[in-house]
Image (cartoon, rainbow, N blue to C red; front, side, top):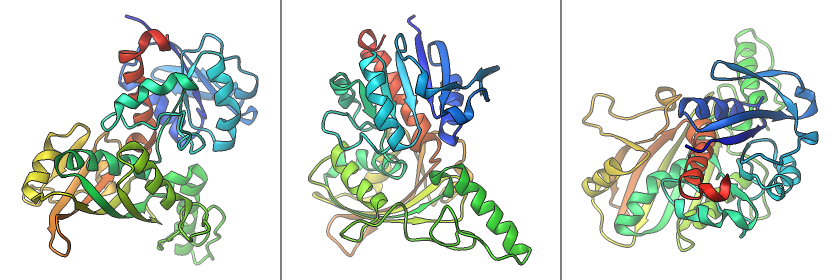
Length: 341
């Protein structure tokens, strides 16, 4: 069996930690694993199974001989190093937003469009979609295959871990501070996040959408079908891990809730929870550390022709980021391993 030299960029961050954990959990065929980060983290140690890896400096690292790079630094960092790594022969699976809409870079969710991976060799870069997009398209794919999606209206309830460790610290410190009668300070977020919800994720654009909302629209079209219309409303909520979405879908053809549930039950990467079951429905708190996208509250929408509603939740650090990247790597070595090795 072939094995691969893997580099994890952004190894000291939330997603980098998860990438290392998942590579080990899933027994990915590695010959060597290298942890990379900025020079600020030089010499720090991160865990890979029972091994401690010393963090090396991304700026000076030579990617020659590296097979696959799992990357989750900032978008600006990716913009600089990913093309260099690609030119050195590594295949970069990038979790940042920088390459997602590049027409020469595949944007991949393995349960939805694994065939797109074939285009990786144009730049030796594959993009990992936005966390909120990933969980939605995993749930939408079996329904689109069944009845053809015309339009999606989604409202998200996104945890603070999507904005990194500083955001998680801010929620913790603000919550603690409010109980101690201290005024909360908003530094990572635009407004107080503790005991609040913020209808802004990323910056506002000219049409008054936020960039997060635009990502959900543009990425869904690129991954699934350019004809699908998407209206997204993205909201940050005071939850540490796990994104939730309430999704309303309008289809080309007639589809019943019963048919939809069967398709979801049979779909890869989806766990369907019925109201009739003991759990009834699933919340972010209950699915931390889980790999699948959990769908519940599937019901027909009588206000439009061929309409359905459902609720979906997923661990944004796993399926929304690290796991999806590792799954792409698994498809890469399975179907294109001679090219990747």
